[in-house]
Length: 482
Picture 1 (tube, rainbow, N blue to C red):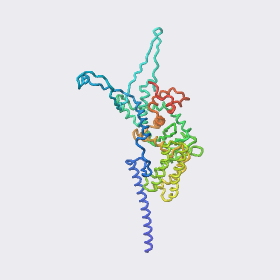
Picture 2: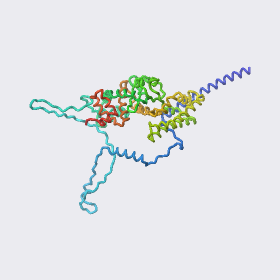
Picture 3: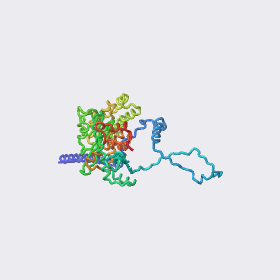
Picture 4: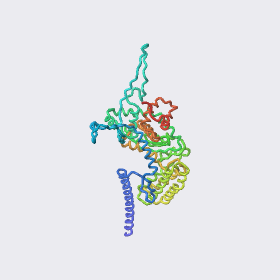
């Protein structure tokens, strides 16, 4: 009997031990989830880590040639600002006589001049277009001056006004109802529905240029892509904004879902390199005969960042060396050259291989769903995409380019919250593409839109390339018209 009881106790103890292990694992999982939510709400969002003092580069002198050159460029730009001369005259009482001798023999000498930078609020103006009309006294024939170009025949709002509405929403993430309030303070009372109509009108006019940009994306040898969510109001579901970036174009696409249909529709069967994270939605365009998939080492690094472990910190230091190589190449002005490739072979490759070796050796030491197990398996599963950059200096070792492009969408998601429906999402994507492409080429998007909203209506389809931001900059440079 005693042996039977001992056996029962052992079985019960083993069951309790297994239950305790499961409970502790669950508690650990919940604590990690809680810590992640706390960090997301109030924590530090930067992914930068503090490097050991021995790895820190020597501080750059504060007033070296590089700093002086940067200041000179800023001064040159500052000198191009509109200048207003404000006269400050001596008062009549002081002019009447010298306070020292009482005589009135003043002559003007060199003026004391100082500069002050002041903000003058933007002005809304009401243009009155008066078209001269002539009548022939012999035959009573009338001749009238041509009408000024307008975005819409008989429309009350000019192209620069519409461009301001678009830029304020797509670049500054200022919702239309807030723009209505701001315009009211400047003396123009306009309905929100009017601004909504102008916003969508601009997207409809710009669409031929956008379609041409979409058609050019597959021709690029290297494309960076990513996606994020954006709610739709009327159907109460999540939509998604995708971004596809090349050296010359930035294209956003709106989709009612996150399936691989969008990458397939944009890239088709084109060849080259696609730099993305590990999301499976890009699998359809990264098959043999199509694009080579390059991974994002920034994503791999994030898997180790939140793990409080010496091994995780060691993996982070290896990945930091990979990113340090890119900074050094930029500093030495060898990006894309043979020297850049050599840096990757001699410094980046050993760092990546060290991580792979450690992950292989420690794969069975961590359960799959633990943070370390997740990090190890992500790195091993993505090993081939993550190392494509080692042999191709055209691409970055990460996908931060497209992630940065989606920040404006994420900020807009907090401000204007949603798009009304799928068509509104398409229009937002069209106009955001124009804004981002202008930023890529150093163009003021307000100037570009104000000019193109008029030009595009008379542009032949065969010449639509002239209105692409990079070509417009060289050919037109400044908006046409008064």
